[in-house]
Length: 116
Image (cartoon, rainbow, N blue to C red; front, side):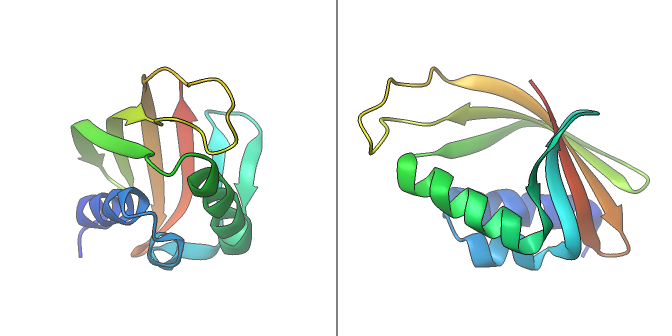
């Protein structure tokens, strides 16, 4: 599977809110972070638990790939994200765009950085 196909499969798992499938495409020490910034989810377990919490809060959460490009060991997506109403009654998050940079080591994603 190409890196582009893997990143697309990660988004499909994300949209299905299947955290186990999502992290199956990641290295054990993978992380999600702000672009050149702080890690927000560390390792498969941190990513699994962080996404599970987000999906519980926003059960209608969805990311649409608007544009995509593969460059060497990187895949870059421009994504349009909608959250929908929060299950805890908190204020509605307006839809937003994000650039996601997926870094690969071999056939697994080792890091996802978000530019927002």
